[in-house]
Length: 357
Ligand code: SIN
Image 1 (cartoon, protein in one colour):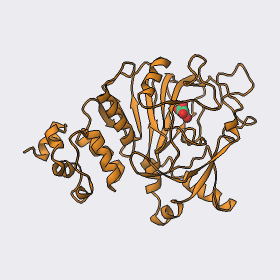
Image 2: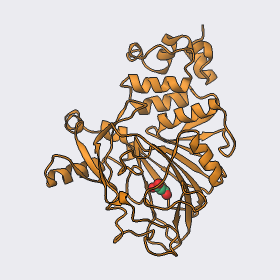
Image 3: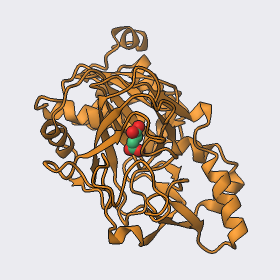
Image 4: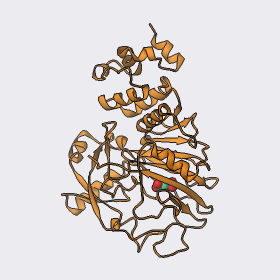
């Protein structure tokens, strides 16, 4: 019989251990949760078991994240080191430019779901390789307003020229939440970055929701909110890209999506982890259905203010070659435009998502 201590010391979860659900459950978390966790099937991998814990229990996801990665090292093909207790992990042991096995991809997907955002250092991806990696997870989403690379329309080049006043994405947001089916996730690759500054911050939507009182959570649970691209991409105020200037590094199109609106739940239930998170963001959400204007404005301000809090956020300092892959269904991010003296070039591929529930 394998002891808990042996498992922790070996930093691996042996297959024989997976067949002993009681041990698995006790080892991972306190026994009070164990009865709620379904017994693992033999075919289940440690990553998917960790997700089952996220889905079936009320254990705080931050605890699951940290314990899975640090105490139990649930991954076999990759290494995942959390960057904070609340979200984010650095993944090593993979070269994203190469075709990866299904086992490795399954673990990357599990880590993506568990940590919300995962970081891969020192990768070197051509647009074809970035797209090939993205396509292992789903179909790329073409940006409806900003034009992609001429050679690869599904790859968005996010450029800030030296001296430009702002970065693209300089307000908290979930990518393309104004679409009827907002982008599931995003894969951002740093091509050229300043020596310091212009980091990206991420903030956990589950943590934002869990931070509210039960009464407030109850109040917002069934509300819906209006999302639109029309403010952030308003042709008369937008900066950092251009609708009319052919010289501009980023080119915007006056597409129909600029003027359409979509209603999404204020609290989104993640289709894979089952966790609830706040799904309104300051870049694209303009009002809450059914409230008078001042109520809607103040409630949105309260909900926006749950993002960027120290306990539920992380910050990524880029080096050229790094890749971040995040889940737009359960976090928001912001590009911090604090260095205008250097050029910054990033390439982003987003994945098609589903209708938020
Ligand atoms: C984005 O909003 O997707 C871009 C983030 C960044 O460039 O840091």
